[in-house]
Image (cartoon, rainbow, N blue to C red):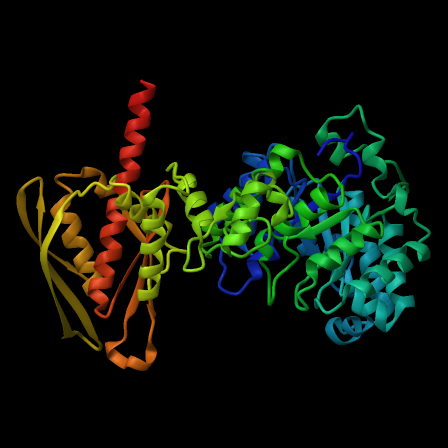
Length: 574
C-alpha cells in the first residue's frame, strides 16, 4: 500500500499466530517463513509473527527474520499485558518481546469485567493499570503499539462504562491502534455496527480521519508510511488512535462483521488466510480483501497483487497441509464454476450473467463443469478450455455428449476428474494416443502376523505390450492398489522415463449403491502430480481393483500427454 492510496484499509494478518491455533494445523519454522514471505509479496502491511518467549519456535522465527528481513511488511510481535501486581519493566515476558526487535508490538488486554475478576483474578483498577503500564513501558523502549481489546463486544454489552475505560487507558498510554475483538465470535453485524458507532462517539474520534497520518505522508517511502516519526508528549502519542477489527467466525458472520466495522469507520482489518483459526476460524482475508477493494472501493493492495490472491491462498493450503476449500468464495476452485447448460450458454455470451466479478481480478479462472446435466454449451466451452475447437454441428460434439451421459449413468463423475474427460474428448476426436496395451494383471494380498499386530502385504503381476514388445513385471506394495500401481510403472518406465516423476497425491473411493453390499459398484478418483501440475482421473467398476486400475492408467496416460505438450512447446521455441 502506498501513502497516496485513497480510502486505505490496513490489512493485518494473524495466520502465523491465531491461524495456527486451528485444530490439526501445525507449522514449523520453515513453514512460517514461507508463509510470511508469501504474505509480504501479496502486499500485506502487518504480519503477526507469533508470541516471542511463549515457545522456542517463535523466538527462532523472529531471529531468522532479523537476518533476512521482509521487503515491505512489518512483522509484529504479540503478547499480553503484564501480570497483575508487577511492573512491566520486571516482567520477563515483555523482555522477550523487546528481544524480538520488531518496530510494532500487539498487546492484548481484558475488556470484559468477567474475565478480569474470574480469569485474571484481580481487580478492575489493576487491570487498567496493567494495560497502561505495559503500553507506556513498550513506548518508552521505542516500540509502536497496537492494542487488541480482547472480548471487546461481550465486555461492552455487559459493562460499557468499564469497557470504554480500558480503551481510554490504552489510548492515554500511547497505543496507536485500538482493535475491537469479537473473541467469542458471537456478535452479529447489526450489533457490531452500533457498538463501533458508540465507541467513536464516546472517544470523540472522527471516523473520516481514521486513515489520518498515512495520508499526510505523501512524500515518504512505504516503510516510513508504516512507521512515521513519533510525536509524543511524556511518552504518549499525540496522534488520535485509529481503530481496527478482529472477528471470529463462531456465528458464521466474521467477514460480515468486519465489513460492517469498516463501513462504520474502522481502518484496520485483522484476519487469517483461508479463515484458519481456533474453533470455527477467524475472518477470512481471502474474502475480506476482494470485498473491501472490489465491492466497497477501499484500497488494500495493488491490483497486480490482488491478482495473486488465489495462488497465495492455495499455496498456503499446501504449506499447512490442508486441502483447499473448493467452494471458498473468490479463491475456491468452484467459485467461478458453471454446471447448468443454460448458465454456461449465458456466461459464454456475457460473464456478468452469472459471475459477480471477473475471476482474473483475484487470480482465479472460470471453469465449465461437465456432468449429466451438461448440454452442448458445456461440452463446447470445456473443449475450448482444453484447446479443442468444436462447433455444435460437429458429429464429435454430440458423440462426446452422448458418451458423457452414458458413462455418468454408469456411475462415472467428471466434475472432479477433468483429465479423464479430456481423454474422453481426445478419444472421440481420434487424438488419443495408446501408449500401451494391457494383457492382464493379478494381485495377491496377504494378511501376515507381525510382532504384536498383523500387517498386510500385496504383490501385483502385470503384463502389458509396448511398441509390440510384451513386458511382464511384478511389484510389491502396502496394499493391492499400491502394488498394482508400482508394477505398472515398473513395466513402463523403460519406455517412458518421465513416469519416474509421476506420483499419486490422493486416492478416494466412493460406494455408489450401498444397498448392494459387498458387490456394490465403486467409483475411484485418483489425483496424480508431476511436481508442477496436478490432474484427476476416474474409474468405475464393481471390482475395486479394476476401478482403481482404470483411474491409475488414465492418470499415467494424462501425465504423458502433459509431458508431450511441454516437449512440443520447448521444441517450437528453440
